[in-house]
Length: 108
Image (cartoon, rainbow, N blue to C red; front, side, top):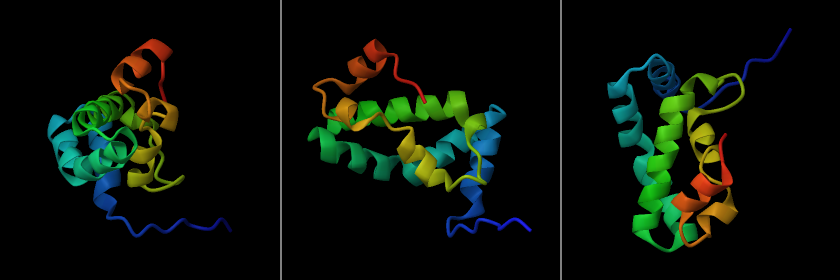
C-alpha cells in the first residue's frame, strides 16, 4: 500500500493552481495575494533591491500562468513549487535578473 503525502498547507493552493491551469485569472490573482509578498521578500534578500525583486516575482507568476498544469500535488506543496520556479540563485544575484532570464532561456 502506497503512503499518502500529507501537507499542512491549505488545499486551496492546489485548487488555485488547477483553476489557473484552466485559464482562471481570478485564481491567479488570489495566488498572488497569498504568496506574492513572501516571494518578493525572498528575491529581495538575494538582489538587495525591491524593484528587481518585484520584476523577478512578476516573472514567477507569468511562469505560473503558463505552466500551472505542471504542478503535481503528490510531489509537494504548492508554495514549494512556487519557490522552486523562482530563477536560480545566480539569476537572483545578477544585476538584472529579468534580462538574465530572457537571455539564458531559463524555464522550469
